[in-house]
Length: 354
Image (cartoon, rainbow, N blue to C red; front, side, top):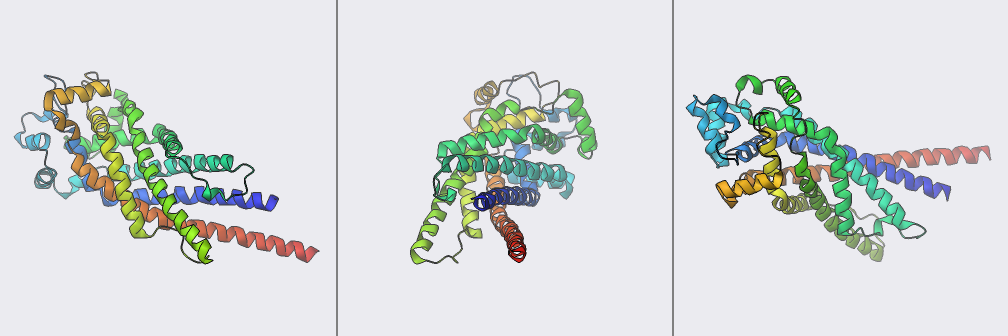
């Protein structure tokens, strides 16, 4: 019994290590690879952003520069990309990439650490005295959503300040400020703006929860069918993990669904994070901000930037999930191999003494 408990604890430990490492590496790689799209979608979401009459956007700091106008009025991702390249060069697409990569890696690592830890507790609790394998325990979508929301809130105290800083770097129009993350950080600290937009996470916590719930539910259903098929055929050597193509496709579907559901709050969060101290008091309520946007600019305004958000988000999630599945499989295999090796050595030493 002790050996069985030890093996179960090792499996839980290996699953957490595998999830954290694979999610962190996959998150950093996907965020870096698709960063130009991240910059474009953030600028579009922040453009024409003021929902209050008579207020000015952050780009009005340079009123005398007519060249800044396209940056705040265009709703075309391609038009904005051409403008950025023409006026600021290729480097404008990579401002803040280091901060974004660190934020993404940290966010994914902490999210999956909390999610996997909570999931293991759930499986252990449900299993109880039952002799069935914990992998056969089906987690309901509601439970999955609750665990996902809890895991999302777990990383916000650390990652939200990095997210705010990245947004300010991406939307800054002052060339001197955009080249210095430290200068923007000092400005944000003096403004007390490290946690701008946190109220949006009352709804935004559902985004990864919905995304990973869809992913996990479909994955569990698919792998359970494979597992049952293997048992009937007595084929224990058949692969019981998603292929890269399957993980990629499932990542696309899950991200698309979750993004569309919560996008108005994503837009509202960006608007709050890019505002200067003088304008942050204009609108403090997310629902009011969204209502003012619809009133002043129409319903389509709350979905401005949805195209680039979906493109970047879908590809990012698909690449991350594809990398995560492969890295997780390798890390888990290595960890279990190490545990088995130690167990065999321990057994051999015990038999030698006997």
